[in-house]
Amino acid sequence: MAAATSLDQAPDVSTDSYLVVGLATCFLKEDGEVHEVKVIEPIPSAALEAILKGIPTSYSLAGGTTLGELFTSETPQKPSAFPTEAQFCDEFPARAIAAARTYQSRQEAQSHIPLGTTRNDFNYSTERKRVLNQTRVVRKEDDVKQHEYTHKVL
Image (cartoon, rainbow, N blue to C red; front, side, top):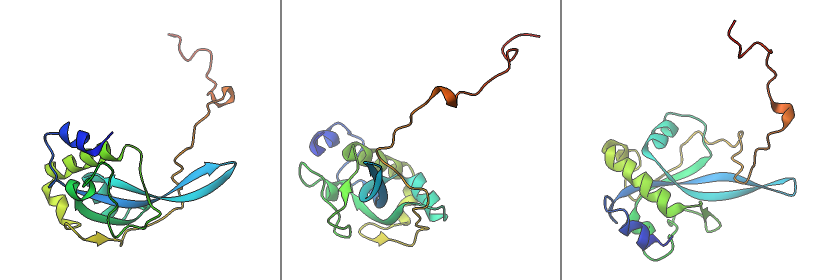
């Protein structure tokens, strides 16, 4: 989805709409091995406030920006503080617009990371790895066995 189309379809946000984007450490599982990747993701206001309270997070860096700075052309532009090898998350334009809406409804959350600044004093941890391409396979052995009278009226 092109950035211009996304902003046109969201009349409640503008190029001046504030949001926070973070640099997350994620992992991809390929051929039984796990590879680290850096992903740029929008951070909604509620998630940012939880991160600032000290919960462990995969975000090593976050910056305050606007939709206009991210979408100057058809493709999103990486903020200058982010490494060149970082890649954008899936559905970045739609997620960025959704995150911008959360900061419109909670104006006070914009003060945590002022526009144009970055922050990296989070409780950064990769102990619980965020594997992006992980699939859950449910097997018959995973079913919980129940007593025969569980669903009967006694």
